[in-house]
Length: 247
Image (cartoon, rainbow, N blue to C red; front, side, top):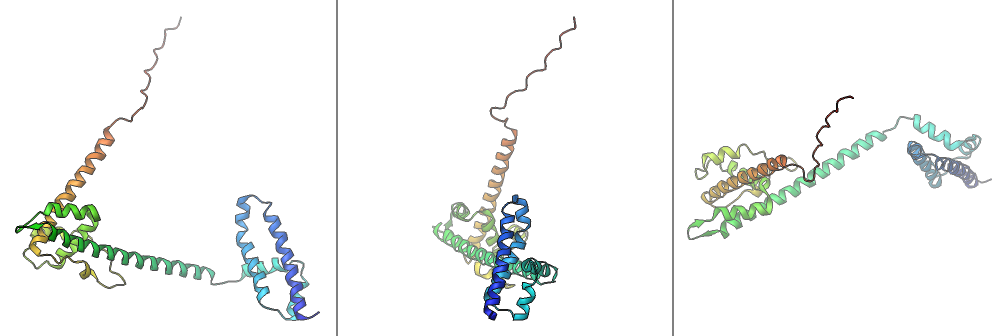
């Protein structure tokens, strides 16, 4: 027999062994099948490796001489120390870091959009040397929500802490707002700092803080009301029966 024919003979023997193992697995309960799924996959990989490469005549003869070469290969592989778990962990870390950076970039884009919306709202609600700060703030809060709007405003006030046109109250508030982590270690907060006139921006911050407090009070009030309301349709407990005197 040629070397190619010997490789084919070994492949057929191992393939038949795998089919027998597969048939046994299919008779097992689901939990048992899951226990042996890793073994099945590794054995499939050995068959795939034999399809792609050829062994020497001596190697083939040694494996053909064993009753169950595929089973022997799996147990040899199982006992061999590999870097499999290190590779798994490396893959896990890489994907997590990629998703983290991706999420940070998306957050940065949303912050930039929020900054632009604040500037447009201030410009659009400034008429006759007067700013309708409440209308401007409501407009942006409805679009981006309190958390993002306050983050962008707090970053702006923090960056302009030297500017006396921002009130001391707003500067103190801004220092309490946590800032998101920088992307790739770089500080890009400058890209989402509000460039409107500081005096108008300060009025806008005042209104955002007031409206955020009002929303928080309304939310707390609704939660309190829900907790106090009796459950609809809940049957009243029947009064305890009076014990009749014994006769």
